[in-house]
Length: 430
Image 1 (spheres, helix red, strand yellow):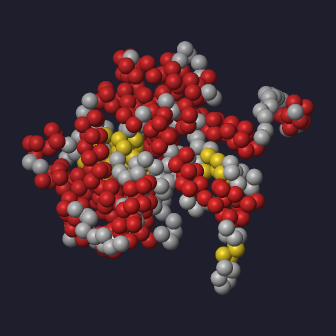
Image 2 (cartoon, helix red, strand yellow):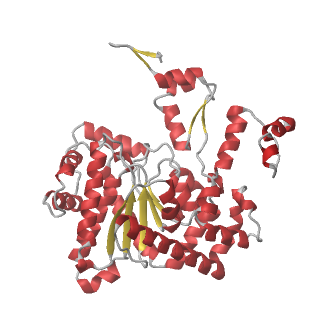
Image 3 (cartoon, helix red, strand yellow):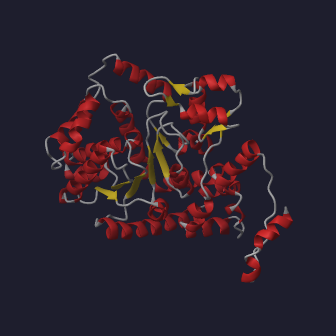
């Protein structure tokens, strides 16, 4: 527990110093906070009982529903009696739950989703130069590119799906595969070579798949360029399936998963970060959960350290062999990553979770074929997403950490001269 790490030169343990000097420390998802208390900060949790807390992240419904998805916002307001109080009291969305089975509401929801998909379709054409079909499942993973977030597993599955399509007789393909557009976006740190190798693989696969006329519109792959908040406001409302597939125990929280649920997308993901709490709120039956839990990840890593090998399996090995054969062009930049994965370097258990991931994707396809059922699940997610408002998060900070009380803020003056002195009015209110 020393604040100084011995050695030459000596170093200050900044995380330890922060804990000692702060009156409260918090994680941003329940799983994350419990891991902190049980592992790296267990001694400090014993020394300072109650100092380490949890404050689950939230996102603002003003931007992430009302501004980015105005037609959905209007539908919600109309359904809840023509008022928009839900925008600042997101728990009011609970009142939408019965409307998941309401035919009129369902039809309007489907129409709005289609309009949002059309908007993204135009954006992708303009910014990525790829024509994507409207009548496909829009499958989206957008976040920082990192090995623990496992964009690599996503694109390995895309290759597996592509090879499966090619191996299936043409007259059977439509019955076996739901048309899908897989979109991956995000940025890599400047010096993160493996992350950039993953981006290279995604773009190489995209080039091959999108120009293969033999599969038609059964599969398209897009790397979304320059992912940022502005593009997110177009991407997220259009999503039907959202991927949050980090290795269990590695994601502090995640907030884009909350944004996707609020906008009527279903999640395929692991029980990691805020996915755990989303599952608690909306029900696992409205998600596609797969993969090892934290305890399983720990056991697998221990087995890898003890020399376990031969775990790749035939279907994933075929994907590896297809990449290294040059089928997707020059992808040598990723070859060392694949070699490491297959030879004990699978720290993020990409290989171990791959087959569970395939099974979950099969369930996705079967569910999407009943589109009304799919949308009912999405509406159930919207109705149960009130917990993930940043208003709730900030209220918890105010109550449990900052010990402050709300005060009324006066309406700003319409007179520009007096508006510049509005701080004085706030002082009077205090």
